[in-house]
Length: 70
Picture 1 (cartoon, rainbow, N blue to C red):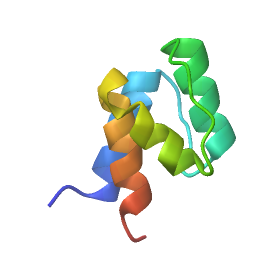
Picture 2 (cartoon, helix red, strand yellow; picture 1 turned 45 degrees about the vertical axis):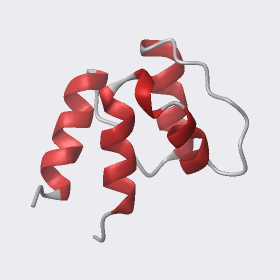
Picture 3 (cartoon, rainbow, N blue to C red; picture 1 turned 135 degrees about the vertical axis):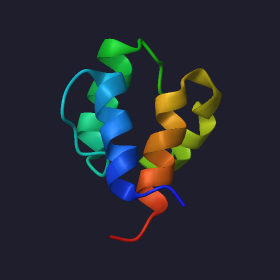
Picture 4 (cartoon, rainbow, N blue to C red; picture 1 turned 90 degrees about the vertical axis):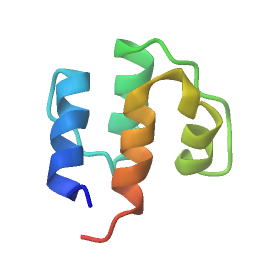
C-alpha cells in the first residue's frame, strides 16, 4: 500500500511547491494557476475534484491523499 507521505511527496513534485492537499484553497490555487484546470461548482471540493479527475494525475493523488487516515 502506498503511504500518505509518498503521495504527498508526489503531489508536491507535480505542483513544484509544498502544498497541503487537505486545504481546499491551496488545492484550488495549484489546479487553477499551474495546471489551468477549470473547477466546476459542486457542494464540496472532493465532488469538484471527482468531476475533473481525468484532467490531470495530480487530482487522483489529492483525492487518494484526502481519503487516507492520518
